[in-house]
Image (tube, rainbow, N blue to C red; front, side, top):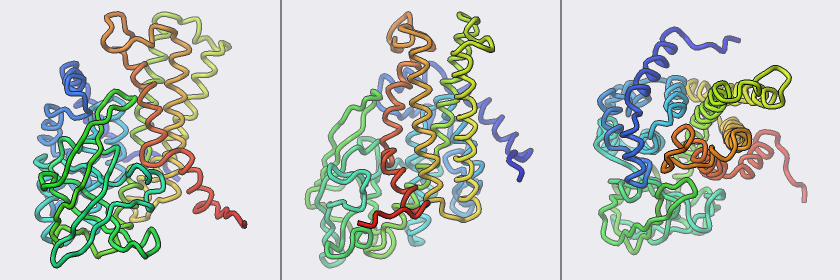
Length: 386
């Protein structure tokens, strides 16, 4: 088997690197810190100007028509440079639900606008009692004539305070099995009855709660058939769990650790030193994480659904990122604990920031425990006989 990229893919990777080296500036990072969320309007516009908000959107819908391998390269390299990609990532994930389940009118209305950077989406999936077990969600949509009346609460919704629309999962048949009674809706965030409130994460950025109080949503804004929304929701989760974002971040923390030691403590990088051996082990594990993650991208490129494989990539890469970030603090010492606000920080305070944010990586899009359960049940066919 050939695990290498094509010449065109390598050239694309180099183009992304040059772009990030030029555009992920201190000004962009300061913009994020000042706003308190992970959205940089400045950087987002530059992505739109490059056409990179629409990398894997089909050409007939205003995109570049790239395959998931190229999308994986894009995710890994922008993550390596710690570019603010959350808004683009959410749009990409949710556009695929629209492309999969949406009718022609919905595709015409939303997909091209996303490709041009004119719309922001948020995700209305997780609820206070339905996180990793998303199929147990309770938000209710009741059909009344040509409309749905929706009531419920969503939580941990990134960009809900910025979004134009929310792709909302709601239960339309409370008597059906959990996975079979859910529908998806495209909800205008300006709809009367929607209230958005802030939550502040361990990573230091804002996410949100969303309350839906008797909101009215037209039937034309339902994605796909009634009670058949789980497929679109699951496809979105598989894309989110591909792992390459976490691989890119893990690589960067590892590289910056080596750079620091090479300059200030080169004796720790000698062949027999325990620190050198630890970093070599991490390097091997990063390569494993990349292979697991690019397998997911390859399967998606081939039209396959990498459900178990996505969980494998997600759990391995997020746990590795957290482990490398924690070990970097232990190796470098107290200076790595200083934030970007300190004048004496190391690597602009990003050792400390990655340590905090990496803990979140093992929770979002399904906890590590849930990923292991998916692998055991769906991949290894291990079922409790009791």
